[in-house]
Every structure is written in C-alpha cells, then in structure tokens.
Image (cartoon, rainbow, N blue to C red):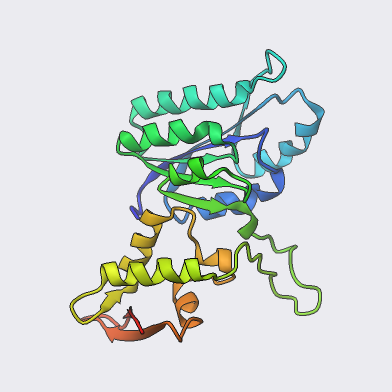
Length: 243
C-alpha cells in the first residue's frame, strides 16, 4: 500500500445506502487520501433528499444526472465518463468505485490496465465479475457504526458475512505454501497480499476478525504462528506455517 496514494472516490448514489457513507470514507483513508469525492444520482428524486447532510459532513460533491429514459441507468454512464476524464488528467493514482452494480466491471478492468490501483466497495449482493476486476473489494456490511452496539455488552456487533469453510482453509493453506521459504515459514504480510491477489474480496472482517493474525490464531489446528524480532526496532514480525 502506497501511503501517499491519491484516490478518486466515485459513488453510485442510486445503488448505495446512505447509512454506510461515514464509515466508508473512514475506511478509504486506510489506503490513501481521497482527493476527489463525487456521488452520482438524480437529486430531484425525493428518496435521495436524505443524502444532503451526509454529503456536507463528508465533503462529497453531488453530481446531478437526470434519468433520460425509463429503464436506463444514466448514472452509470456519467460515472464512467468522469472516471476516464480523471484518469487522463493524471491527478490521482487510485480509484475507489462504490457500487453493487456489475456495470462497472469493464471500468475497473480498464483502470487497472492503465496501472491504477482500484478499490471496490459494495454490498454482499455485488456480482463476482465486478469484485474480481478490483485490486481489493470491501463489503459495506462489515463497516459498522457506533450505533450498532450490542445492547447487553455495549460492544460493537460484528457482522459475519461468511463462515470459515474448508474452501477458505484451503485458500489460506495454499497461500501460506506459495509464500513460504524452504522451511515452510511465510511472513504473514506476504501471505495477506497473496490472498488478495487470488481473491480480492477476502477480508478477515468478513469472518468476524479485525485482523488477519487473530483469524490464523483461531485456526490453531491448521497453522502455527511465530513472532520474530526485527533488528533496530521493538516491533515483531509474524510468521505462519502450515501444520
């Protein structure tokens, strides 16, 4: 991840619930600086009126796009045209496309062909072609707000989108093996990067774990973890090995 990545955030307002926006913008800052923030929709429609305060709070520019004909999504076309304009200005080196619509699959592919990193965000219903066209895809359901706290414990409720199935175990084991040295040990950071290349929507939070390390620790019958000292620093590196 490039810390000074400048990201253009383009949001399909007709396709994304407003309740996710604040958490979504906070998530994007983990990957770079959102220098362009635009949301597209027909803002004359009553159901989009609730966006006003949210857009002001997050400094997102609304782009008006009328629906010229019934059954056609003019918002998608406007987003795609703007994305290509932004690409050719060379003002950003990353895009975040926020939609659960597969119509942006070709756009994500084209941006990556140009050497631009593409992050996708959408709901779990997002079609797989759009997901795999991105470098990383994040499900909006795992970005919970402070209001989503458990009434009994007072702690944030975790949204587990998936269970850890044998297929997931196989993905993890194969990735460890692919990144391992001759002794079978692999640096966990390298393993995480490799998993994302294989499956862009992989996220430990999908399984209820904030980070990759506790996810691997929970699977102690399948993996061994080891902490190693770094020279000239107090931080330790985590290595993993298949059992």
